Image 1 (tube, each protein chain N blue to C red):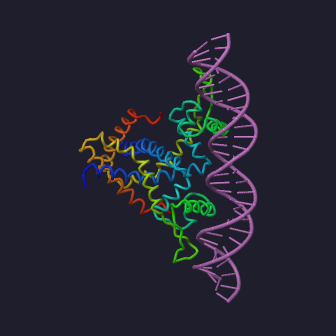
Image 2: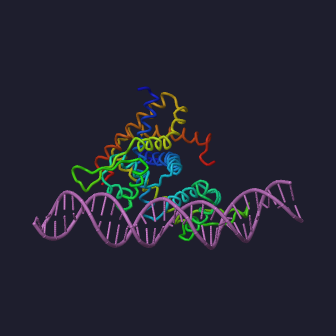
Length: 152
Length: 152
DNA sequence: TCTAATAGTTAATTTCGCTTAAATATAAAA
DNA sequence: TTTTATATTTAAGCGAAATTAACTATTAGA
């Protein structure tokens, strides 16, 4: 097997293994807390730094009307705050409340918490090796982001 | 920063970066093909080797009635086949058709396809380093699976 | 054997998130 | 200034996917 084949294949298997556990835990958390996919997606969008209502809708692939209704629910439940943008009063600025940030934190733990079990099975040397390699990957992925950003 | 802190933190950032892209692409694919979260979840459950109808429902967090209806739709659309289990005639064995396996393949490509852009930015030496480290991670994660399996 | 538990299906109903359409407010363009 | 475009909200209604409840078939237990 050539180096590049092996690289891609290894990464593919890795993503499959890790995504399966992480996705599962993440979806279960959302369900348990009573969040729809759109709602949890919106919270993460806002966490990363949202634009306005339409922006969030586009990101989730729904109309701005749907986004507006969904955000209204999140406001009622105390997860986000809406306020008028000073630059353009048509636009609403949307931010997370402490309660909202708490959900982000918890869902991340749900998603990644199982990794801690992994840590205990590794030696210091192994951890260092992996840390170095992963940092390299993150670096390159971030560069990729800059060239072809996710947000359109 | 201690080695273990750095390890966990690095892995956390990694998961965030990679999950975001992968989830997004995955959800867009599902939406484009008209699959609900449950349906695509069910297809993956079956791909991994399903138990019966109730099993799939439990995995997705819905009642067996809901699972049965959903699987019926997947049968109608030609993605799966249902048959009686010889061991226990109450149970239905569920398998993917070629068409179903095709969906699995496509959704994986959608999820992981962007990784190929990553490959081109890495040197051979870097790829080897990463491959080695990731293989180690896969190994340990698989061992973790055996001790505390995902399927209950 | 008789009874209880399990697996699955079906039908009726409910819930929930989405869309369309109409309305308001603001900003940008002509 | 008048017109057009953009951002958001609200209301009405639709449809997909879930639940509950009732029923059949099969298996396991008393």
